[in-house]
Image 1 (cartoon, rainbow, N blue to C red):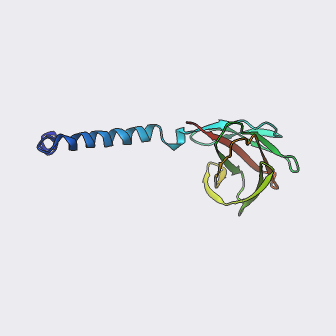
Image 2 (tube, helix red, strand yellow):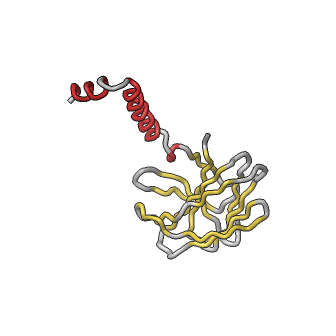
Image 3 (cartoon, rainbow, N blue to C red):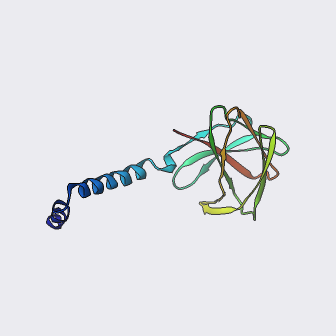
Length: 153
């Protein structure tokens, strides 16, 4: 098998060998440092309670608020933000509002998958303008838990 590979690569130009090795190297780096390693968790500034959510891969804190109270998140210096949403029991959709720079953005999230006893809903990805310091999350559902992530560079 190795002899066949050697004949294939060395009988041709050495550029093909370099291209193949660099391609394999890029695939290995991408698998090690892919998108899952590009996000870092952010703590909420004000919240009612936090809960440890145990799923087979990990244990993480998820935060929730009691309506009409608001979840407040400091975002100073973050250009990209990801908000994950989970719920213990399944619901057709979750409605929530985000207040960014005084503007209200409405979101309707649908269930994506179930891991353990929790239903994970669609992620919200935000590209923030410079000068955005605080994001407020308002949810009418008391059983919704949130976790925020910032993009690592």
